[in-house]
Length: 400
Ligand SMILES: Cc1cc2nc3c(=O)[nH]c(=O)nc-3n(C[C@H](O)[C@H](O)[C@H](O)COP(=O)(O)O)c2cc1C
Image (tube, rainbow, N blue to C red; front, side, top):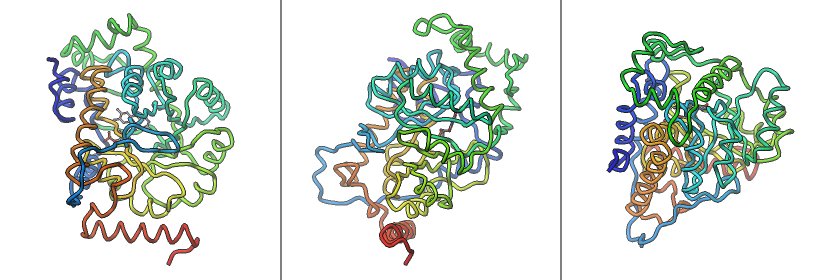
């Protein structure tokens, strides 16, 4: 049995990934910004939320389906946009797309993919979501939107939390800076994991021989990072005019722009701190969620990512008012540890944990998850207050 089949939870998959990759490459996936306090707060604040099971419910069968932005999903989480697919597996995003479509799970293809967006789309039976990083040149954005439309993507996610190329000391210490140069330190790192090095440099049986594709994957990322720029409300209005499908804004931690986003016709937001990768010291996402759910008041979908590692974490986010969660690193570990099968295993593990969580919590469906599961502690009281206020606000247009 392979290591990936033996993995019993995401921590096991992470360990399998860590063993297969050079340390410096694993760190690119794993690391956060600065002292990584936000990275750990994402976990600690989720862990601090204790759930209160309902009793005397027949949970012999539980359903995990849900609807997000009008689309049925087999599970209440999506695979969020993560670049560097090709550093985990020679098939990169294509392997992720295959595993996602086989499981009926949504996948948001990253804005700096290591495969072409057409290749990734063709690997999925269902229309995928695409995450765009807006560039300074409007003509380049128009071209990109045309390509996204032609390739059949259903939903556009615009990331608004990365106004400049992120600075990560962990990567710089490892000699991993962009543009990527084959420094002696990186060559040594690659030599420490020869199987990974061959997969990365020349591909494997499934991906074909592809030195060019390895190079292209690095260029695609470098290119996107070079032109990183702030995104403003005017950009969102511009996108809304040109994109007719559902439009989602990713990377907010405050409710400050919700009314304007609703007015512009944005369909959803993702409460995200980029998995603690962009600015250390910002709030955990689960702490940021309730006021945003309140401000949204059901007028747009609210999703959350950063730190989701267990089925019970998804339940925590939904009990706090999110409509769905994204996972990032968990499926990247799976991709690194076992390619498409590794991603499939991660989905399967989270699915299993969700079933267990729902059954022990006395819930029979995703719609059944509610704030009563938070008990009556301060978190629950705050959340209920915020949600009540939101309903009031949505009904009357005023607060209180
Ligand atoms: C290796 C890696 C690459 C990422 N690349 C992108 C990206 O290209 N675009 C984006 O919007 N977010 C990107 N993210 C952030 C994820 O979409 C997501 O917000 C984050 O990973 C969620 O936290 P988690 O990893 O704790 O689940 C990336 C995250 C990782 C770990």
